[in-house]
Amino acid sequence: MQSGWRVGSLLGIPLFLDPSWFIIVTLIALSDGWDWQLRYANWSQGLAWGAGLITALLLFGSVLLHELGHSLVARSQGIRVHSITLFLFGGMAAIDHESKTPGQAFQVAIAGPAVSLGLFLLLQGVRPFLIPYSPPAVMLGEIARLNLVLALFNLIPGLPLDGGQILKSAVWKLTNNRFQGVRWAAKTGQALGWTAMVLGLASLVLIQDGGGLWIALLGWFAIQNARHYDRVTTLQETLLSLTAEKP
Image 1 (cartoon, rainbow, N blue to C red):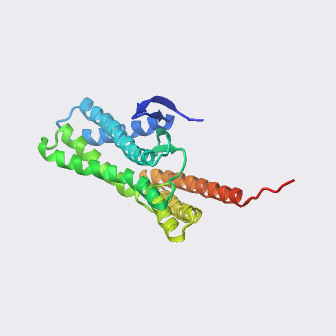
Image 2 (cartoon, one colour):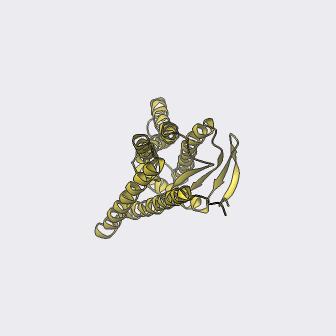
Image 3 (cartoon, rainbow, N blue to C red):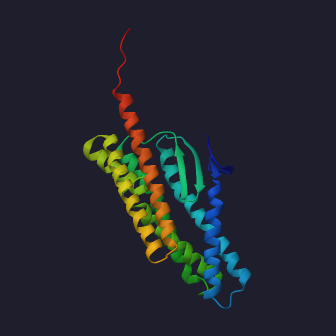
């Protein structure tokens, strides 16, 4: 069953908002609003907080386009896309089944980062035409930077990130075994997740950096999802190994 609230559809793909989405939007809006109120003395309090909220919404608009990139490439391969959900850690497209070849799997995986990188380049190209340090220039600069971060972060080679899907397709191509590809990418995702958790908690405890908690949460999310991929792959392999016998 699909969780969250359906808020419409985009190109025929249902769009859902998970309750956790409201938490991260609020945190981003407050963080940017507070920072810009202190940094730009000529901005009023209302302007700074309003710009923070708009930036948070534009960021998730970028995440939505990132997931739409995956979805449209998958749909071009005849794969049904059930929904796109925005949540605490970004977005996720729910598809009917995986690509049939490693080449097609790579195309689906790389589409999202390609969209984010394209948005970064587009917004960077627009910025010179705006008044420096004006709200539009500052907001577009922040969204451009975050799209670059989104593209690069998602290329980290571990599931559930897009880089993990790319690693899966590469191993699948080399071994001619999709299960091996998933297993390698899942194990890498778990290792990276544990590393993020340790570094994040160490940063939180040793230097009282609040950002360490967010890194630790991202690590936890990666571990849980990588384990899920691993379990599903084991189940699929087991089912395929079963043979029916005549009574």
